[in-house]
Length: 138
Image (cartoon, rainbow, N blue to C red; front, side, top):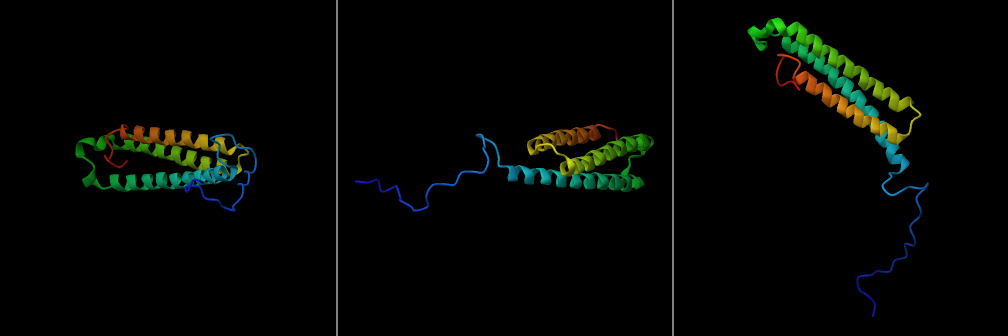
């Protein structure tokens, strides 16, 4: 008597994947799409850092939002914020350009994306301790 859980189908054998993949590797088209999305993340990051500069200068130009006892520290704090934000804009645009023009492998680009993520986290952490600027903007 046959096992009732087994169904016979006429699908046939599965077609082999193009190229040779080792266990755990992703297909090349998925890696290519992921590296293109990484470039888009770089563009979005550059736009967000640019918006951060604009909003920070807008908020600090309102005297009611800056504590009077910390107003003398504001120019130095703004210089740090602007420097970090401009550095991040350049790195983000550089990441976008590199993902589009590099001849490196897709896995290398995704590893580079992990480094970019750590760099952004470091920048945000630096800004949290940069000075008595507006609190809670990050």
